[in-house]
Structure formats: C-alpha cells, structure tokens
Length: 107
Image (cartoon, rainbow, N blue to C red; front, side):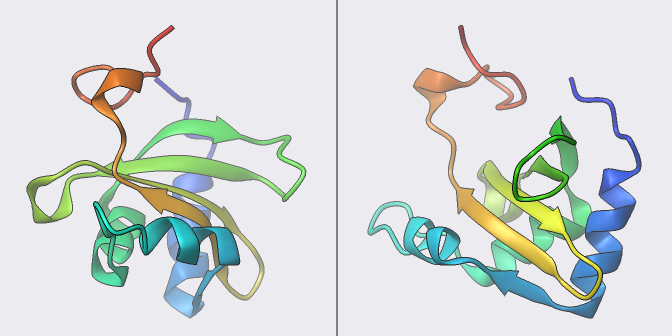
C-alpha cells in the first residue's frame, strides 16, 4: 500500500479549484465498455484512497487513487497543480492485473 505523503490533500485542494481532463483521460473514459463518467472520477478524487504515489513522475507529483462509486472499482491517475487537478487517466481496473481489492498490481 502506498504511503500518503500528503498527496491526497493536495489532490482534493486542487480539484476543489478545477478538474482538467487530459486527452488520454478523455480517450480512456470514453472506451465503449466500460465507460467511466465525470461523476465517478469526481467521487474517486474526493473520496478515494491513494494506492500508489509517484513523487518523481515527469508530469509532476502524481498518484493512483481507488474508490468504488456506482458499486464498481475505478482507478484515477492524477497530478495536483497550483490552480487545477490534472486527471491523467481514469479506468475500471482489469481483475487479471490487480488483486481482488484492486489495491495491488499482480506480479
């Protein structure tokens, strides 16, 4: 499990200002099955747990969040900025690649 280096609070503070969906996120969310909608992403951002922390990410400090809005697991990778939260991608994790609780990657 990730150590929360304060990134969760940074994510929520940035998201409270504005959420910006980057092109990759828009493409990933629009896949025919399963579609991830904006309300699910917002629920993950404001209620989710940090399961991976990427302090050295080239896009800036980012993290992987998990929550289960609408009763299904949703992952959101995002990076807090001064004036907005950049949503890098959002998707429903594949059970074949994740533990049963979708918190740890399978080897």
